[in-house]
Length: 502
Ligand code: ZN
Image (cartoon, rainbow, N blue to C red; front, top):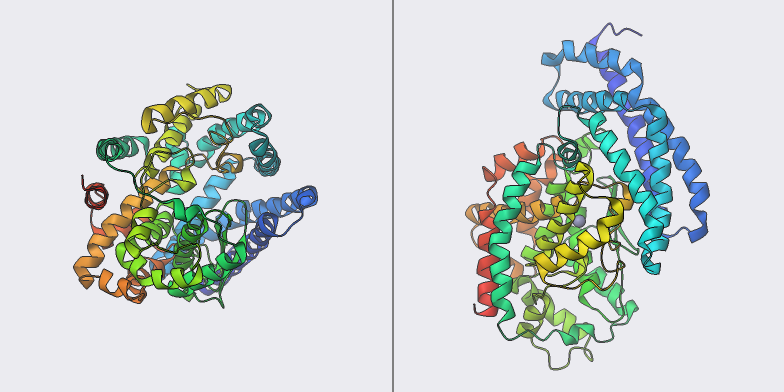
């Protein structure tokens, strides 16, 4: 079909995007259900449905008719609004990329990921890397091949990194991580020679039911509108978003750990605020949702660490915490609580790591991914390499694969190239704080009164509001100027020097 007028083409563009959004919504609800409510044995039927929907979504995206539509709109690009022009840019990129992936390979890959996810869920508790290895081998092979489809001009791992953070590459990350290590490793070393912080009271018995109402309190304090944001329980916390009026966060409660779920809720709540803060105009279009994983993690880790682990925030919420868990926190002061939630100690598990050592965990994964994709490391040697790197970077001995290379779900979901986003996001957040304080003055005075509205409003105005309208690099530069990891290393140095009296 040929297009004869701009209104006709724009109508087709809108219809196409709302159909795509509907497929994404349906598949998103299925995966949300899989992780939260579906019984363990239901994966096969869901896999079949996913296969059908994935194929339909592929056909919709790669439909040659779209090429005709995009060419027509490209010829009239000067008559488009900036939003329409950006929609066209994103759609064309997806189309070109999808056209390079053979349909059969695309669907087979989604089936592989569904099987790999089930295999990982069994292999991790059983501490059985050998059972998961064949799936990881296939995933690495697919990622290497797909990298060529995503962007044939880039080095394969750079192409994968670009899937999560447009414009990112190994050259930038190598320098970024070297800079982080140069700051973090000496700090960790100095802290190890200081008296250690007592956080044992955080590991007392905290009934799950009480922790659930604590989550409600935290979401309320963060200003999350529960009419548009649900919370569920999963093995590994994450956030799912369907539009700016339907976001789901998840957490995991441990009876003998108060802070694991507390900081999961604040972290995922940060992701949720980003999604909830998007302008309505981006709903049901390709510009819906956060623009990149790095920017997304900048929001979640901003609330989790920069706000959530600040003295001001602890001051604001400690009276509630103490009245909510009176027996568990007898004799615990606000200062003791603040120090305990900031205790730094090299450990085995990334999701439980403290703010200072966290990025070292990310670096281990980055080195392994790089080597897997370059073909210099074989899957069977991953456990050994993992353990060597943990010893080298964190100084810890990894006792088993369950707490070692099987701990994260990312690789089983095909997420090779994702991990660096966590470290980038942390660094972006520190630079955003600097900008925010230049604009607003001392924001922590408000935070100490439990008022996060100014912080959230600033982030909404500069980041959330745009959804995916601006590219991540452009969005960041317009708010903060050139990215510089020094804001983050200075922030960490300041905070941990004060905390441990270094
Ligand atoms: Zn996150």
